[in-house]
View 1: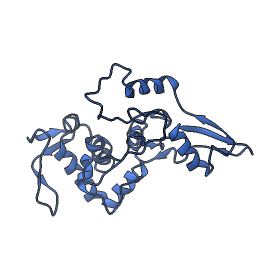
View 2 (view 1 turned 180 degrees about the vertical axis):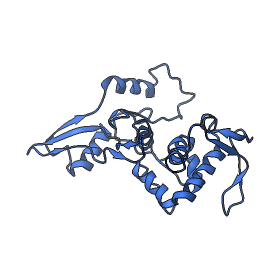
View 3 (view 1 turned 45 degrees about the horizontal axis):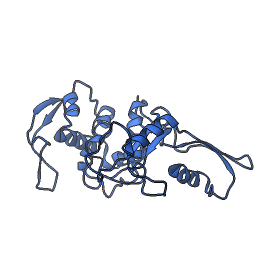
View 4 (view 1 turned 45 degrees about the vertical axis):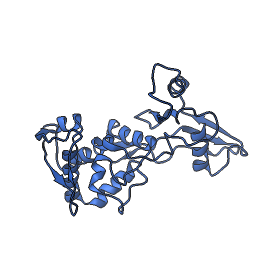
Length: 248
């Protein structure tokens, strides 16, 4: 409901608490109930302590419809911080498929047979030598294994090749086009390949970007509202839909 209220104001410029309108949402009550059971510790999911928090988005990957939201544990009815839609955090390795590798397929001619190099690496003009989570390097590695093992260096080297080929501005524009609102030409860095430094996003933004890959390169901004009908008959529909940002 919190997310719907925010979306109504964005779409119509009206306050739904004082302006009459019919609001048709995308919510799937069954999934919403399941998510609320999880975050209220009323399911088989066990949390290690009371401090661990979560944010959950369930989205239709083809339409961008958000069918359920988990705003966080102990979300008791007050309009609090919604950790699925409002909490900006580093996305980490979850961006590797949709940033480095998607753009390499698009602009560098990569295929599933590509062999990448996993070796010690230092960002240009910097001194820190990067490593993988394991502390080891794999040498020549297939793109499937690089993604499957979430290797850092191949993702960074791949993004560097993309930037060298098409320019950083095009990469930034691509990230903006798939919903990452806090990525700018000023804060972009090669470490974005592994979701690091100043790359911050929400669960909702990340869900929309991954849905684009599943949807054949077509991006739909995630939305909770299917349609709004005002008292005078004016209708509003979701914005920023059906944008082909990558080839199928």
